[in-house]
Image 1 (cartoon, rainbow, N blue to C red):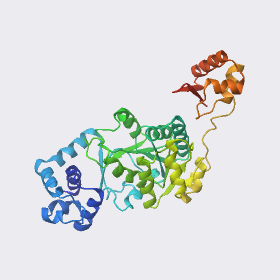
Image 2 (image 1 turned 60 degrees about the horizontal axis):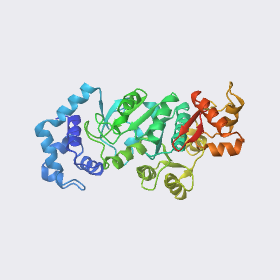
Image 3 (image 1 turned 90 degrees about the horizontal axis):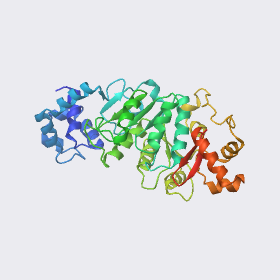
Image 4 (image 1 turned 30 degrees about the vertical axis):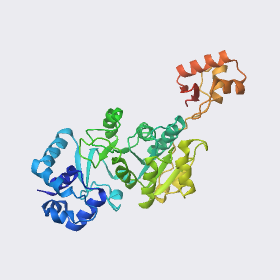
Length: 367
């Protein structure tokens, strides 16, 4: 058995935590030596599951690891070992780096400059708009955007990075042939053409809750810093932030409304010492490596009132905000326009894709 086969066998056993794996490799020197060791010796290693040695033996006996390698080859999925030159150098330096990564796409030298954007799945329009704003600016500066492909903030960050012409890496808490959430399966394929989708879990691993804290250490490990956008106090994004701090990475937090549950996580982080950021430039100021980047700016998205508007449309567009929705009553109070004028003006702005209706009949401006 060669080293790659041994690493895949250990992964397919599904009984070894990152810490247990690190202890095994430290004790035996290589995955091949772990596989060849007596079960009793494997079981003596700290943090190793009592059923781990038996599960590993079952994988080898049935040839599951060899079928896994064959399926990776047939699906165009690369198996990246920690010894490989393409393995991310930042990730290699954490205490418990994954010895094996499943990867669709490519990681290259450009990804040494990477920042993570994470946040809640049930994000508000404000949160997704801000995540997209930061990700787009990072992309323009050729900084790779790392996130977890989850609903909400993660997906918004990945999409904006691609729209900005940049690279993005998604670290998933499932196997690459069982993408979670399932609605992002097609997007994961698209994303891999602009960076990579990676996992340390075997191909058909479902996206179980226990997988995501383990996944989060890779998100922070790949990144120079982590930006948290909208997260409740129970959000897994705070685990990523904590892991980032333990790994010596910078932690940034975007403030929000003080009465919103989604602001509690970032606000707690700020009180605990995370850097408060309101603009992408604040992130660059906090990282020496990014201060050396060319002074590129994302295109100004609000050059003025778009041409071809009626007076009613222009009045509404000037008042509408890009991320904080406004009701018809609020617009009426500010503009003095009649309800019928506002309804008609909003409808034409939506048709021109200059405004968007949010749940609760609230409206935002699209720049």
